[in-house]
Length: 314
Image (cartoon, rainbow, N blue to C red):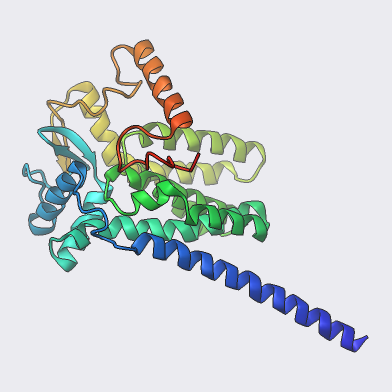
């Protein structure tokens, strides 16, 4: 009997060791794919990368963007409202530390992308409560074309899915009785607002649905909900004010060193349904584009997908 228990114990240890080795190798594979020939594997600088880099360099050196605005919550680019702030500030830190180079420009996106792989694995494991499913998910994201491509460019929009992922991960951990992570997730969701324009739809919509569900299932209480709303509102307020003053036509103003900017010429919201003057026409155009992307997985832009394999393979 004792020998049998020892044999079973050794078998379990062997399985545990093989699983850990598989996880380790998948993480190594994912990282190697992303750092292979980085940062110059894609030698062309995208126009959005270039503009972000110019503003980041200006912020790193002067605390102002290339137009003279002090720490704006949204950046003017090409003479009109153009780019979300999160990547610019990450890039400014990188440039401050390492100087202006392709390495500095692309480092923040690479690091955030790699961190997202670890978070994704842990999130799937927590939600599914099944390590095999989590390992399958890890294997899929390790070789996901979109995740690989976006780690090699520095485009402001690509910060959105990662920050949204990090925030949901913190929310899930918080619901597992670690309340500080629950409240920290609200800061994460607020910061996600600064990653790309469509976060204006995505984040509040998700939080509203989550709040209704969590209140209905009694996972959270009214006091906790009020605290969450307060945290989210405080940290997202500067950006929300930017949308308000541009919608109402108010003038630029500052909160300390932070600039809440009014943009005279803005085309960046023209394809967002809420701001479109022709909502039905724009809605049809957006749905058509969505359908094409789902079916064909390629919009003709090489920094969004590979033509032959799309964003997630055929």
